[in-house]
Every structure is written in structure tokens, then in C-alpha cells.
Image (tube, rainbow, N blue to C red):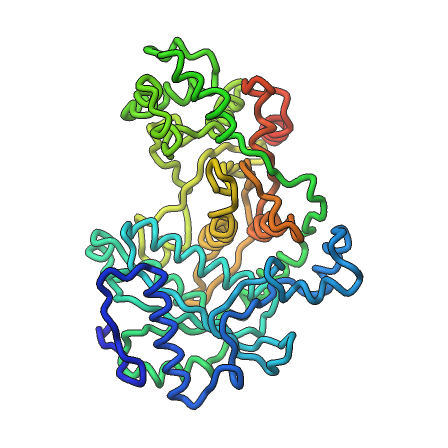
Length: 460
């Protein structure tokens, strides 16, 4: 891709020291200038930062009827309000710019300037695919355009770029979006003009996906949605007191979950167990490798039930790879899909078990919940989608069970507490369980929990 900056009314500023958010704003300024150069004006031809619904009014009205916050007419308005089933989009073109417009075209802006290219780029790919999917499942006539800032090499690690010569993320996004505009392209103004009138791609693919999603019965029972935090409570009740005991060997750890995590860490680098021995509470709290009570509880339950499985936590955090995804077909042979646990059901289907937290740490909150919910949509798409001979996308049925063990507060926002569970359902979640339900009051594993009963039924 030619490294040429657009030279219209927007003047490029220095990138030195700019954060990702500032670079994102810069990319939006570039696009805004391009639209003005085409004679388009904000407020007259498009809106910026508009909440765009991804559920129909009829469907959401049925869900909202179970929530005391809405009257008979409240659902329609809430679709467009903050906290509703919507996504805030950067540039929105509508047939009318009334209070509740009918959306025709969306341009989403993204850019890359990662400090850790691998994870950051993967996350941007997942978020872009997740947003696109939600919109297409609501409106098959929607034109979805992606405006990409940043140099091509910023969208891949040095190793990936050397091996593939391009960004796997950008190539994948080009397969799904109706049009992708690169901010550094030659003749960028003509690309923007062409994008605004482009035909819709993969019509049959999206139609097939929508048929599947429309058949999903979205839960209307907020009592089924987890809102307790096992990881943080376990640290307070078990791990921090364990520090005061001055443990010197794994065998001295009485709690089976804590002992299991320490044992698994020793098989790797032993750092987590070392933090316990050194009474390093801060190190324990920030450990994202082996301080994972939900995963440990899952592994211990599977062991106690005599079920055969693969698990990341028991192999020195070596990733458990799901063997096939669309990225292989696109030529990216080392871009795998991962999971926490794999089992095989009695009907021969694979069972993937994911442990997911809403995020927020000791202070609570929902810092990462949006990313983590939409990420599952992208992972499902990349796993199930294949290419037709003509290069278009083919939608395939989900031929596996996908089970989630959820930790922390997934009951958010207050007026729509099932919002993120609905996204997981749309992604293909077979069922979900609260991480706290896996343990007893004394934080030993609960061998009589619904999670293990469900797996035993699938496997035996």
C-alpha cells in the first residue's frame, strides 16, 4: 500500500507521543475533511458519534417487557439511547436526520499504533468484526465501510509482516466489510466517493447468518446472568491470608484451588508460587497467568468427574489450539484460534469451554466487557466461515458446543442487564455458568454444580 498522506484540507500533525485515542481522533479528522471536500456536511448529510441500534424494535420490545424500567413506549426510544442495544458509530449516513433516523451507511474509523502489536491488532480485528456483525444482523441493507488509519506495517508484528508480507487483520477485514478505505492510499478522495456508493458484499453470507441469529431465543431473565466475582473474592479470602502463613512448599497449601494454581505455575516458571511465598500481594493481584481461580476450578471439576480434556492452565499456559479457521484459508497458517478447555461430546462434537471475566479488578466496573463480548462474535465468525471458489464468504453451521464460565458482573447496564449475554448468545454460546457457582462457601470446588452436571450429560 503506497505510503502517501492525503493532502486535502486536513493538515497532518506530528505523531510523536500521540496515544491511540489521539491517533483515532486524527483519523476521524482526515475522514471529516475528505467528506467536506466531497461537498458533504455534518448535520445535513451525516451525523457523527451516533448510537445505532443492532436489535429491531419488535425484538427488543419483547425483551424490554420484562424490565421494570420501560413502559409500553419506552423500548423504541431506548434503542437509540446510551446503554441500549446499540453501538456508537463514527460517521452515520441516514435517509433522514430526524431524532430516530433510518441508517443507510456507516463509516467506522480505526487505526493502529500498538505498543504490543500482536494482542492489540487481534483485538482491533475482533472489535471491528463484532460491530459489523451486530449491524448486519439487524439490517442486511446497511452499507458498512471501514476507514483505516496507520501504516500497513503497524497492523502486524515484524515477524508476521516478514512471513506474510501484509497484515492478516486488514486482509480479513477486507473480506467482510463492504468497502475498506486506507488513509494512506493514492487517490483517497476517489476511494471515499466510491465507497459511499459501493454495492453490498457477501449478501448470501449475511442472509444465512441472520437466519441463524433470528432463531436464537434471547434470555429475558436477568437472574441467570452472573454478577459475582470469584477471582477477586478468592484473592481476599484465600490467597492474601495464605501469604500470612509464610508457605514454603505447595503441599502446605490447604485450599485445593490455590494449591492447583501454585502447582501449575511451578510447571512453568514458578513465578506465581514465588509471589505467594514472598507475600507479594501486588504481584498476586496483577498476575494474569496462573492467578485464575475460575480456570483452576474448571480443571479440578473435570478431573474429579473423570472427563478427558485439554487445558491451557495445566500445560504451562501453552495455548490450546482449535485446529481450523478462516485465516488458514486466507494464507495465514500460524494465526490460530485458541480456547481454555477442549473436550469431546458423546455425539463426536467438540466442546469448547471459555473462562471470561467482565473485568474491572478490585474496584469492580466493566472495563473490558464490551470488548470481550464482541470478541466472541469475531472468534465464531473466523471459526465457522469458509471461502467460496469466487472468493465470497460461506456461512457454516456451528458444529460444536460453546460453554462460558463467566466471572464478575455481567449484569450491565442497569436498564438492559442482559445486553452482553445477548451478544454472547448471538455469537453462538450454547450456555453459560457463573464462576462462583463452581465453588462452595469455603472456596473448595463444588462437585455438585450445574456446570459439571451439564458436561457429564454431554460426554457420558
